[in-house]
Structure formats: structure tokens, C-alpha cells
Image (tube, rainbow, N blue to C red; front, side, top):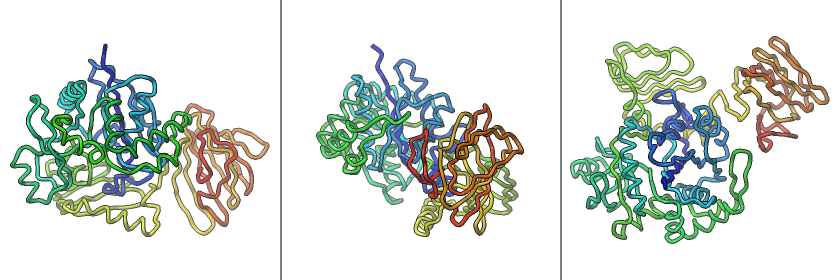
Length: 482
């Protein structure tokens, strides 16, 4: 019987060290940073070459805010999810894996779970698959497997794993987890040869995890099981009971299970992974895995560099020129620019901390905001008005809604709009427009096969996104935004 391999993707991170590209509402796993695929899409397809196993569609554990991004991106790359499980609050990786294991065994199967963060880069697919095959051999022998990255430098930003005696040519007993070291200790680890970076990638049978989490962390098991049993399907998603899940202790896979289990002989093994791995934890890491020119600059977008060396130059919306600069990170987005010394790339989090304290929206949203029906982008705003560009996907529809404080003017610039305005429904085509008075029930739909683009001019005393009352919504959202 062919063994079942179930990829489980944990997609809950915010990637704050990659600001201004990565933001809370659209973090790094949803960006294409190294090739045409986003990090999430690349992760979802990573096991396709393991044809000797029955590899199922990836299961994704994510949050409420990102659920439509996950579904859309996986559909876009032809790899739809085999389940999207929604965490109402973040409770670290141990509850997330418990949720995935319960879902994987609900149908009576007991697959091998391959647990992967959504935001990693793997450059050498062949070596990755070789490591996964070794992991499968160990997991089928009822081992709990983690994957350790063969280090090539004394990194202080990673946790480490110390290997014990070898159990195969590629695997060893997991002797201990080690916290992030200082520079001197990290250099000693590199010379020692027994230490690997902790990748956060795990493999084990689903029932094995459930047995272990109940044994070592019964509070997590009980609360997550309760949350799952009382959960329900919602469109393409599975929504767990929010109160029960929120009452679960918060803990990582390492601390909750792997560390105590590693003290019990050879129950835990670590498989060496030397496959061009990076977690893209900061801009310097992206520079390191990107293609570089003859001056060691990694460039993206409309960039000109002269007498500049070792820089990451990233432009999204306009021309970026660099003259006589070395070892900098310069990142341009439509609403924010970052300039940082590459050596201080880890400290970009100071910017996001400042933005959060100041209540600035640049911490959470880009100028272009994604919604399940499409996107909207702010173009201009002033006293009592703002202008947006709205794109509605083919066949998609905004909610039937009403605003207390603003009126809207819609001008179609591309496609066909089906407009509901109180008891009237009518079509608008390119260069046609309509007016939505304050207090009017209205809806915008795209009945066509191409994206609908409109310019929306809002006017009124209050223009916040929370001025909305929903009457009908195909996406089952609460009031709060379009």
C-alpha cells in the first residue's frame, strides 16, 4: 500500500523584518521574492517530485485575515489546498500542528505529516527530496523527525540542533535543542560540526503527534480538540471554535514535545538538509539568495546603479537610482521607502514597532489592499474626499452594503459593471458612471470574463473603511470593510 504524505503548511507569520514589502495584511509568504512563484506557492509544490508516495493536496493552517489570499494563491498556481484551517488567534506551532493532525485523521486515514513554514526558500529541489525520503523512512519507523540545516556561517539569528550518534548516512539522534548563540559560540558550533540550524520543518505520523501532544501538553490537546470538534465548514475553510482555541496554551513544537521527547533515547531524529535553505528572515538574507550582478548588487524593478557594490536595490513602482553606495538595503514601495545598512537588516523591526505604536496604517496595509473579490488602491485624498482605484475579479461581487457618512461616484474604466442601487439594477460599460447617495443600499458586481476596473470618488464627513453596514455577503464577512 502506497504511503500517504500530507504536506502541512503553517502560514501565520507577519515577516516584519521585510518591511515595507511585508506587512501584516500581506506578509512575505504571499510575495514572489526569488522567482515567479510566491513563497507560499513554492512551498505548496515542494513535494510534487516525491512520486513514490501518495502526496495529497497541501493543508494550510492560517488566520482569518489571510484566508482568501491563501485560497487564491494556491488556485492560481494550480495547486488548490486540501484544507484551509483557520486559527482565530495565534497560539504558536504546537496547537497549529495539533489542529492539522486532528483534521488529517478525521476521515480515518493516518498519513505522514510534513510540516513546513510557508515562507522558506529551497534552492536545490533534488537535495530537498533526498532529505524528505530519508525523513519518510524514519517517520515510517515511528520516529519524530526534524530537519537541520547544514550551516555555512556562524549565524546568531537561528536556534541550533546538536546531533548525537548517527542512525543512517543522513540522520542522527536528536541530542538537544540549543538557543540562539552569540557570535563566539556560533563560531564554535561551526567548527564542532555536530550543530545544525533549526529549520522548523518536521515529519511524523499524524496519530503519533496526537499521542505525544496529549502526553506532554495535555492542556493544548484538550483545548484544540474541543475547538476542532466544535468547528464548522465555512465556504472553502474550516473554522474552529474561537473560545476553546483561545484557551489553549501557546507553545512551539520544539518546547511542547520535541525537547522532552529527545531525552528518551532515539525517539527523535534529525535529518541533515543541505539544499540552499533560507528563511528570508531579513533583507540581507534575501540579498544572499538573489541573483547578483558583477558588482554584487541584487536588483529588482526599474533600477540603475553606478559605482555601487553589495547592495539590495528593490523598486516596486518607480525608478530607483543608486550612485556610489555600498552594502545598503534600499526598498521602494508606493507609500514607503526603506534605507538601511545591510549589517543592520535585523533591526528593521524597530520601524514596525514605531509604526504600530503610532497607529500608522503602513504597518498593516499596502497602498493596494487585497480583498476576496479583488483589490482597492488609494490614489488621492483630502478634506472630505478620497479617490480609489477598484479592481473586481471576473464573476466576483462586493457585499450588498450601505454607508452612513459618505456618497460614492463610480466611473468604469475597464470591463462591465453590474450595479445595484436600492431597487434598481443596471449595467455600466467603459466611460460610463453612476452616483451612490449616502444611505443607499448598493452592490458592485463583475459579470464579465475580464477584470472590472473602476475609479471611485468618495465624498462625505467620514471616509473610514468601518463606515459600512452589510446586508448580504457571499464571503461571510462581518461589517468593517468592503
